[in-house]
Length: 335
Image (cartoon, rainbow, N blue to C red; front, side, top):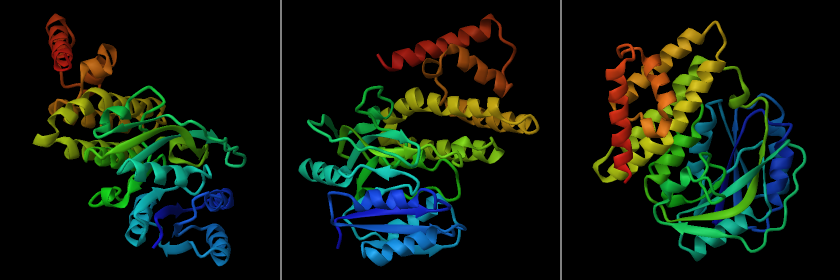
């Protein structure tokens, strides 16, 4: 059995796929399998996969009807034989030392999770640099590093993470939604895995204009992003995770709501009202759950959210005092 299973969903990426596969096959670590899940790709991606699989037995192809990125990853994971798992997007590339470094750090420190950085790429060129004297940190409760501004931080995506397979047990990607990475990441962090954070950029992320982040704003994007928010809340809304839920409220929710607000602002005129209505419903729910922090959002944005909700009386001295009281309570929570 291979030590590492690399799971690579493939859909409509013939432009980038050869570079992606080549980057994996150039890895200094050799004992791995690449499970390529062809998600009903309409282009020549399958032909490219078959060409590479004929040359290297470590490449395995699974073909399914189009079910989306989440199910491609979930189905790939079911077939994985490795002790460690790495999720790799098929329009990107990896450093030749990624698997080797992640595996050895995981082994040396008995880690469930190894996290590292990335840099952006045009999808054609990338220049892996030699990595020396790498700095790292070990944590048994890594949640706080998800909003850390230093180099040793945990990003929301899954392709900057190397997992012990057992850590993923019982945690699937949410089926059929956009933005599936961040809810999965925070579900994993809720398990308080022993984590190694590496100060190294080992991944090359392609700025793909066809990606969801570069598409025209739709109502589905707003609703799907909120599905992720609700999922994260459900994961952390437990007696044993009270402190962690406070951190989610203080640090994560403001970032997620800010992203939603940006989508509302950028929404096409013909659906802008629908978009804001959906966001308003989302905010109502989060206010009811006491998951909107004045301290985290900032007073200006907090007031804007309350106006969007449109269920509070016009702003006057009384309502401003209420906001001030919430702000003070938020501050006291972290003293």
